[in-house]
Length: 208
Image (cartoon, rainbow, N blue to C red; front, side):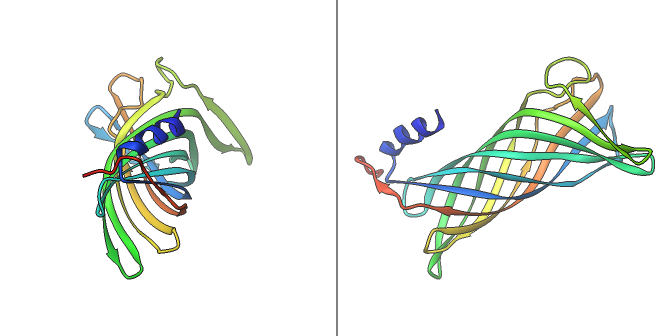
């Protein structure tokens, strides 16, 4: 569906290019019980990879949706050790970018909304020297993790003339992922990525 939508949308813009990206993302849960922020949560490093489609509007502006598998979550202090909260999700950030020529490549900056779909989650900890794992159910009942996430995405980077690019993004969550009364849990992460954009083709209808 993502590829079909990208192909159809390509006819409405001047140039369409496709790419792939991957990298690491320190992530954290921001948790509040009532009005009190919980201090037991710390960042943990996950990873991401996926595809990029760039629809050129003009020489300086484009719309760039991405389809990413993201491993995120947090660490939670538990006695004398930290439990790891591991969440696997599909994120779809839709970025509105400004680009400008710098050297032999282009600097880009922008942002937009991010849609997230949590696929699976678990808590991984240690008890008496043994590693223990507990599955977190995805759903709408108390104690479960909500399946849908929504947030924002800010992005900046540089694309070299040969198609290679590097970028950094910050994706703060807005949606409350907790189903527990009086508790708010939001997921945020900072990403560092490298990728490659393949050659594009002119569409039949150029943008104005």
